[in-house]
Image (tube, rainbow, N blue to C red; front, side, top):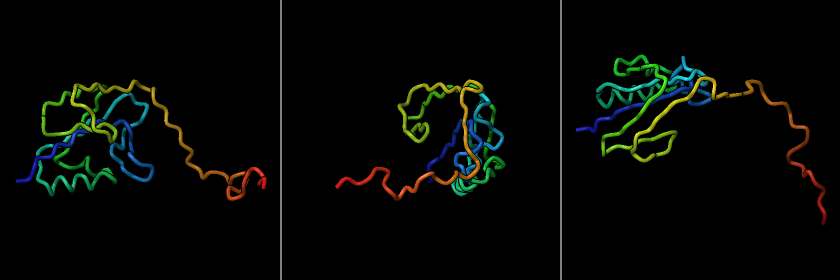
Length: 130
């Protein structure tokens, strides 16, 4: 028998990468809310299909995925045979409180190409002294 997999994610960004990963396309970094994403019981092939849909955001259309808009979350892990991962890091199993106040986070990005550098980076800035 295959192990049961439980997906639980609280995300407040529309994308997880600049070139894709439309995990929560309707979310913004300054909203002060999270989209809670979790799965219903599904077979392994169905779960793989959900994960493959992350880049395009089609995972949210799966009948096995539920979403809720939330303001805060307390995660209190009870299972002993699983891991809690926050931002890619495994954390100690203890109650975890998540909240992002509205407009606390500002993300600035320049969507245009950067101008050419003022100097040639292949040439040394200081003259050689030898």
